Image 1 (cartoon, one colour):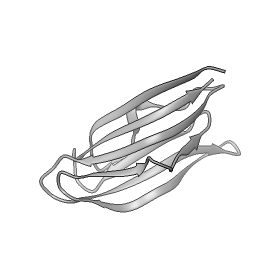
Image 2 (cartoon, rainbow, N blue to C red):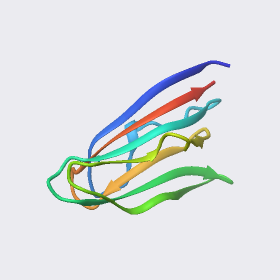
Image 3 (tube, rainbow, N blue to C red):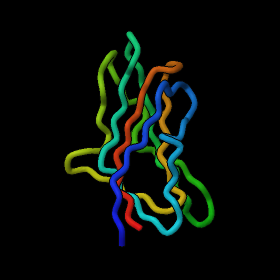
Image 4 (cartoon, rainbow, N blue to C red):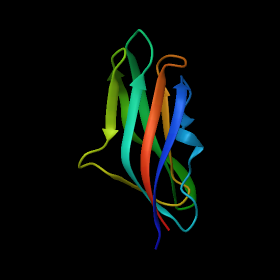
Length: 114
């Protein structure tokens, strides 16, 4: 088994659920999210929604990881990090949306296990 640390980012996410870093877990791979930060790059507070899009029983479901999370102007919210980890399986992905257009940047740190 090979392990690889990677970083996936998205800039200027707005009001539509957006896949972080165009990343979906590849087949024959397990991924552990070891960090997930959402930064508000605007002058006003925003609320963010974060979801894990997971395929279960051949159906894709968005599982909420947080809804309406307040992110003050110029601040960063760490959703995964420290002792918290998130395991993802093939085809899983993370989506983020904000209450304002082009208002948040997202950085996701992962460990891929193949």
